[in-house]
Image 1 (cartoon, rainbow, N blue to C red):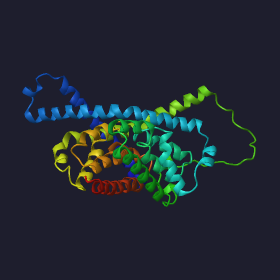
Image 2 (cartoon, rainbow, N blue to C red; image 1 turned 90 degrees about the horizontal axis):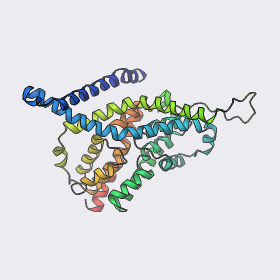
Image 3 (cartoon, rainbow, N blue to C red; image 1 turned 90 degrees about the vertical axis):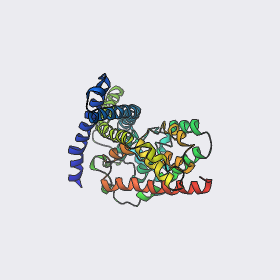
Image 4 (tube, rainbow, N blue to C red; image 1 turned 180 degrees about the horizontal axis):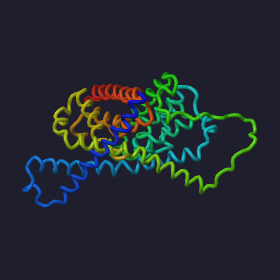
Length: 351
């Protein structure tokens, strides 16, 4: 398992970065060549045109996601520098239910999207956050936070889609967190870099106490941590965004739109589309609104629930926090529950 993780980090991700940059350079050069279509062979001209489209989609997704990754890494640095591990340990719920429910609501205090929530969750794990609480927070925070709640309300109003998105996200995240409360040792689920540090909760006075750093020094350390994590997670974001852009460019949209009314098939298609598009949760409600007149209401709801939990870029970042088997469960459990909920919603609401 460790060797496989090393292969992923040292070979696959760098190769993915080189492929992404290569296509982006090709697309950028193609957009600056006038009349290249009449000079280049048809096959090469088509490749350049595809690279141009891929570049445009890539930049659109990346520019949308990068600020929220930065927000998440800043929150991560803030947690590391200003949150005391011992004080945090005393405030955390002990029961599995309490941890799962609390984690699902934690996004109200940390309004981050699916990009920013990953580095923040890893930092909270290092501070001693229980596994079920961290898993629930990871899945729920991209939806149950003030920014996304406001955007969903603006797009759909205070109706079934709005309340259904919040309710289903809370339910699925809480149930997944509760399942992980039975997972046993955190060391079997988390990579070494994400595992909690040992806590010294002794109340006995120490022989010598370290001098408290000044506020300016704390802020400087917070920014250094944020920058380090931004570049560490950023390479996975680049590869994930590139894969999402490639799928948007190469997979015909008509192949998905042709199956928009089946009670189950429409839900499957919209879940696949959510993964394919990898849109930030702060704006995905307006994208879903464009499909509302074509697809069933249950499938639109599934798009809004599953997309912020799992997409291409967030899955790659999961691999920097969890072991591969745990990542598989983090994908499959919400997927199965979302498919079931979307299908039931279609049958109940009449599609």
